[in-house]
Amino acid sequence: MNKLIYGLIRFGLLGMMIGALVYFVMAILNNRLVITKSFAIQYLAICMFIGLISKIFTIERLKIWQRLLIHSILTFLTFFIFNVVVFSFPANNFKLDLIFLVNFIAIYFMIGIWIYFIDLNNMKRINKQIAKRKKIKEEKNK
Image 1 (cartoon, one colour):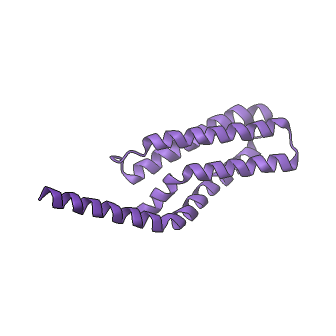
Image 2 (cartoon, rainbow, N blue to C red; image 1 turned 90 degrees about the vertical axis):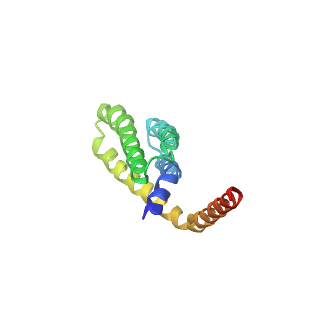
Image 3 (cartoon, rainbow, N blue to C red; image 1 turned 30 degrees about the vertical axis):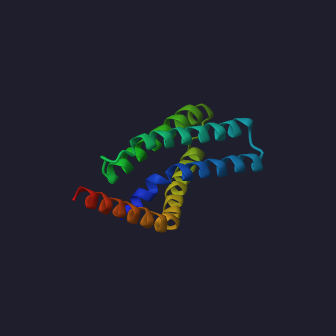
């Protein structure tokens, strides 16, 4: 279970970037206002910013649930401030953006789970390498 949560945190940035790209492509295909396209670009930048902040908080001394909590709070607050406050209230477009927020959260977690299962073998290999290094260090210390 802890590895599943770690996978969600680790690949959250990729999930947010894919979600932003999907939104950007849909804005171009629907040929909506230029504001929507610029919002998609700003959303992608916001997601990258959140990803960088969450990388800072993935410190080894933090427990996995603490990392997930910090990452989720930062993601939600940044999205809420930039999307709902800056873009929705002036345009009276709150319901549409609330639906997009739910889709964003779903994409974020689904891609995190999907990549976790792909990356599971890689994580097992890394854990074996770490165990080998610890054994070598213990043998040298003896």
